[in-house]
Amino acid sequence: MRNLIKEIVDREGQEVELAGWVGARRDHGKIIFIDLRDRSGITQVVFITKPKELYDLANKLRPEWVVRIKGQVNRRPANMENPNIPTGRYEILAKELEILTEAQTPPIAVGTEGHEIGEESRMQYRYLDLRRPRLQRNLRSRSKALAAIDAFLKEKDFIEVETPILGKSTPEGARDYLVPSRLYPGKFYALPQAPQQYKQLLMVAGLERYFQVARCFRDEDTRGDRQPEFTQIDLEMSFVSRDDVLEVLERLMIDLVKNVYPEKRISQTPFPRLSHKEVMGKYKSDKPDLRKDKTDPNELAFCWVVDFPFYEYNEQEKKWDFGHNPFSMPENEVLPDDLKDLGSVIARQYDLALNGYEIAGGSIRNHRPELLKKAFQLLGYKDNVIMEKFGHMMAAFSYGAPPHGGAAIGFDRLMMILLNEPNIREVIAFPKTGDGRDLMSAAPSEVDEKQLKELHIKLRNEK
Image 1: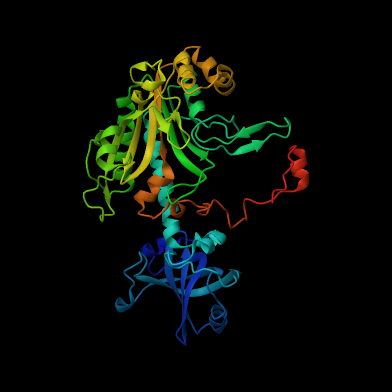
Image 2: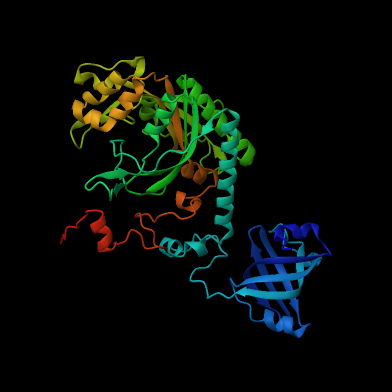
């Protein structure tokens, strides 16, 4: 029965069976050493000249070959211990060796941190890049964080609900990824920028407390803390005030850090609350970095930014638009009749900033259909357009919608900060490059003419 490498520390003098990948190989004449790696760690395996068949077989081993080894766990000589790994006081004296798979020489090194390798090479061979211990640790840490968040929310009586991926295209702040319909020519689904409408409909349905680990899609320019597809922890609650929502999120963050990242230090609790006007005036940013020592990788400076403007004037397009979310409730549940007063409207919106990044955002929602309709009308939306885009929401709210609010945590960005990584690609298994490509599978790519015909799509030949 196979043992994990991490288990050898409790099996001195015993025989174990290990399986994994060959790392470094060192030939000292009459002794061959290899580093064997599995999901739990690394250990040194020793091959001596007898039996000759075993030694000769070990002499063929090369990096990244997959092997099964039986051997005895021995204590290393005191002057040859490796204090840098948990198994560094032990080694395996090999008695049997089976080569399960040979491997070509890897095009990229996988035993280093990887920062010295170009992004294009790492993304092209991501299945190799993920073998490096740093990325394995990141993905395992991500899994532990998700488990902790799941346990916290379920203990607070949140119910996990999956919402559709194929939905309706609506104006929500970024470009939609569109999916053409084969059965309905000329019509399209849209991939969700967020589960915003569905989670509000779940409140209308009476679930009262919902959450989801949601995949979201936005066709916008990528950067170090943004990807075209990403993960957010989405949640919504009924019969709550802004303070109720902030308290749940704040407690969630404190518990996550305490239980999964105890080496981290939160600089201030309760988290400071600053108005949007205050942070823009003082820090020139709506996601201020409040760390006392910005060179300290373990300092976490959370802060709430509240009282965002409901509408913002777009100087480039010379028109008013929603500042954040059209579904937010305006302060005092009132909207003006005169367009010149749009700049004074405050939304019950809030963001959570951490070390200079926005990691969560949300609002108390507008559950009153006529007020929601007016929010769009003030921007010049015609009634027929409003009903075509949001008629289902208006209808739902007319059947007894509870006051509700919620938020979404940018999980990839949060993990980037907690793991001290320079960008979110380091905490995602299969990310896109900075320009939105998947170099490993060569996506996006052209498709067969037959597929286009089935979807009633004809490409323009633009030169």
